Amino acid sequence: LANRTLTLVDDFVHLTRAESMPISTIELDLGSLLQDAVDDLWPSANKRGIALETRMPLPVAYTRGEQTLLIRALCNLVDNAIKYSASGTRIECGIDEQPGFWRVRIKDQGQGIAAQDVARLFEPFARVGVETRGDVGGAGLGLAFVHTVAKRHGGRIEVQSEPGVGSEFILHLPKV
Image (cartoon, rainbow, N blue to C red; front, side):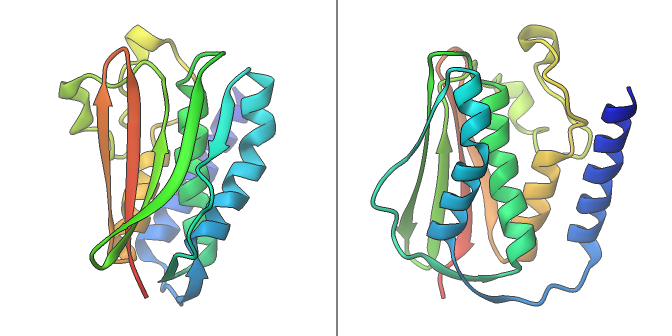
């Protein structure tokens, strides 16, 4: 219980900072930030028997951003994919582009998200599917954090999901 409370407080502090702190942006390569997130979380995926892969080669994908916020947002997305995936499945991370934006894509083969839950996913404290998927922990702040960081950087987050097939989270961030 103490660990869960500390995690809740930590997540809440990070969300509050992301919402209110002045952001000093620098030019960053999303490809290397995504690779760092994958490298950091690979042991966690490996321990659960989940293949965590990066679609290579990652492009050099420059955006302007605050490094700490962006790396935490990417880690949250990859960590969620791991949490909601079963052993023996695959998570694919990659980056592609559309006019004016980079799209960081995190695609899992998890249980997927019911259509009625998708709209609530990015709200603080929203924890969807706990009754059907079991409680994987967390306070429901990780995706709210990602949503806030995306907005503060002039981007957005979206999800495409099919129950029983998996989900793909797509973080859109402006190109430099």
